[in-house]
Length: 157
Image 1: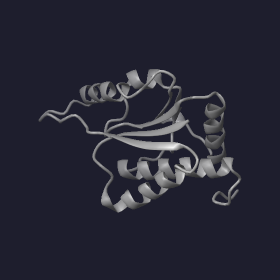
Image 2: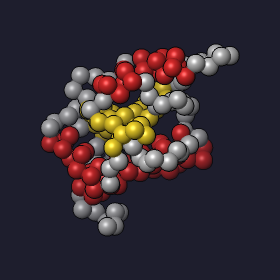
Image 3: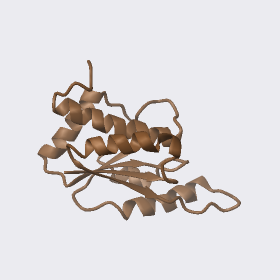
């Protein structure tokens, strides 16, 4: 199974790149893993959030393949504990999912078209985080889930 981390925006900022790269490398011991960073559509002078989200939705949906398990990060989603995330990933592996695709939307969130296609909607928190920080939280939590599945010492209950 492959873990695909999709995000709208710019490349990883230098302040978090090393940590994101480190956790991505750690995940690769358990699953194939890749980042797909989608450049946000050019904003016009009069930014229309709905239009921007719609354009981003098209870009995201072009990446989704048949058989993918699509997980969208959205504040309206269900919160997971770290062990619950581990169980979720294990269940997808047991179902022989080809890929779990985690999607971080753009500045205005994720369009409902993508939400409707999601297998799961996940909320990291009811708090609002900077976009780049969400990338780091996501990749660290996926790594943590991997260590939980292997009963390794990284996660402490």
